[in-house]
Image (tube, rainbow, N blue to C red; front, side, top):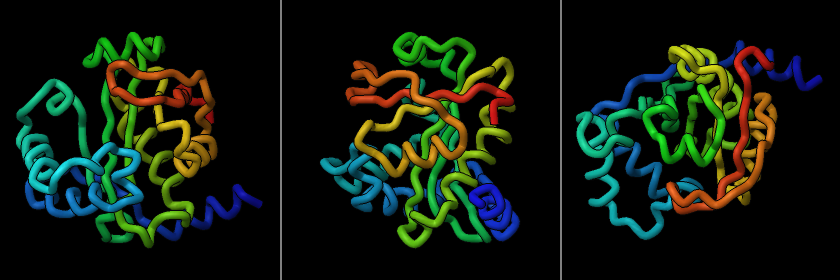
Length: 189
């Protein structure tokens, strides 16, 4: 039953990813300030100006290694910009790679910024498509990881539906947060 619903959903929606550009910054900032996103992305205490400056740097390819070595996209569903998703090769982040202990891995993070698109099953379709088209398209990537906050049950359920399995929970000194590390091997779906 679930598999046929997923098939119907995937044929009903056109999902694509567009590299972020300066004109996307106002939407991304608005999304990150939305309470359902801010709580998981640690933006509650930041001002709009601070969040804007961060995203302007990222669209310009400036800033830290994290700003430069992560590919960031706007999630587009049926012609509507609904959120943000990013992918990266962990080899560019040695401290994070050491914490996860999973070689040849790429990671992803995302948020659905538009509330009306949450709890509709679209997140599962987005993650599946992004893994196939972006993460596993990176040379040498054999495993995709994601490490949500253990309290973010909505996200964890989504990742489980896509085929991620829990590896371990730990406190990340690099990201300054509790993590529920999950992984998916290339071709394991």
